[in-house]
Image (cartoon, rainbow, N blue to C red; front, side, top):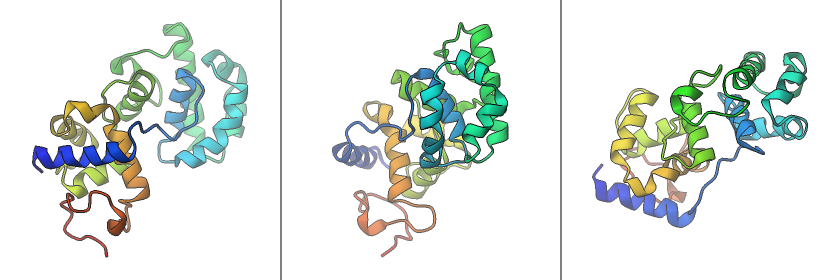
Length: 210
């Protein structure tokens, strides 16, 4: 896809939603990290149902350690893979206390040393907490970017690299949010709503729905 068309796509996204935000509920930098870890292979809606009551009681790594893994599991048992996620959250909370003074580190490399935090999670946190121009590639971003023609890639990491090159700098801060929301509500996996799509004429997907 040529640069002019890419710029037009994001111009339209920005006109519709100038400052998109994560739909995950959180109260501070730490609870944002916990929420993003919990959101892996789960919906934001499902995560929010569990975390609103959890974060009313726990909003620091010290408080999470005091809560303990068993009680944490009870709070998040409605979320998929909750056993593994609870173990990771306790582990990352311990590491934050022991190695980072109870604060979430501000580098991707340091974030990725925390249990349960991969590249995508780190990128989401850096973008949402610090406003960094990272591009977090989840299933929606991977699908939409390849479907509409922003890139032709086979893995999330290759998609991130391709989008970093393709998307103009002025759009990068919000780019992955726009793509996530587009994939979640319009360009859905099974049947995209092409008739209701604001970039229908720019999209290079050949099998548009009617």
